[in-house]
Image (cartoon, rainbow, N blue to C red; front, top):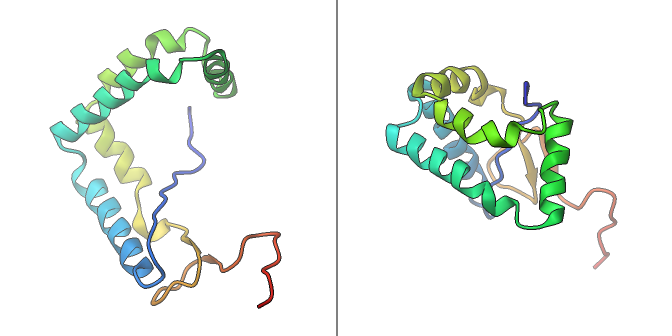
Length: 136
């Protein structure tokens, strides 16, 4: 994909811990942008990404979905044969460059679901969108 439109992080925390969870997320994004990944983190990520590819292609549905994704992302059909080599070619310097550009905690848009305590979110959903909450 030439340009990612969204980087998403999902957290699960109770209302009392939501502020702490968001604080930790912002701290970790900031640290990653500042320091980059360790060699072990890079090795683990590459092993996961390259090793999980075949597990994602276990049915006709999976294969067609993957090919559809390639087409949507304007990648050639044979990209799947080149993917692992491209992943393995990524360097720590590449990761740091991209993390510095994209992982800016101050630019995060925070969407919270529930009734979190001690935090002001950009968007808070206290009920499911488009659904009426039953009256007590």
